[in-house]
Length: 273
Image 1 (tube, rainbow, N blue to C red):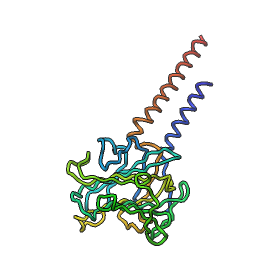
Image 2 (cartoon, rainbow, N blue to C red; image 1 turned 45 degrees about the vertical axis):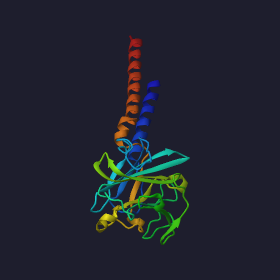
Image 3 (cartoon, one colour; image 1 turned 180 degrees about the horizontal axis):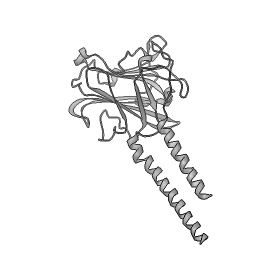
């Protein structure tokens, strides 16, 4: 009886873990081919606008921004649910090597009103949309916008460093020895009522390369949520981290169950003799 109980517990743990890994959101409208996985952070983020340690952002999925210039972003989240869920972004603009007053970072959200729901969508900023605009490499150039169904409206419904924070810096990173601009972004989701799946647009602009235009993922307008990408919120670390952490735990459980089963068989054989 005991061995059956242990085996059942192990199976439940394994199946639950598999379900977490495979879990994705389902929505009806976003730009096809643009999906990004949002994993639980393994390494804590230090909001200083760069890679504080060589592994600070290795536990996050990376996407290339569309455009003629080289720029990428990564994302992951930390959670103290139900009190807070901090969403983090790292944006690196490898080809931006100048300090221009018109440079900017931009992140757009289209959120759902209920858990695993679907954003309103459409061709104009809806009431479930908001946008972060950080211009000129200075917090004085930050503006927060919300959609009203037809356009963007400036809003002060945020607290700097508490539920929105952006820091950028100019320097090297583990991905490039050439100095370039790097930004770290934090958005606290609980205070904004953001559900696990939503659509995003991440963009960067270098005024010294104006002819190249805005680099964005996806290549789209900041005004059209239907053209943004899908963010899949996963309740596990990125697979490499999962292999090291959770899978080691599951392996340990497997060994213990196997040992218990083997010992019980040996005891049964001795009794039979």
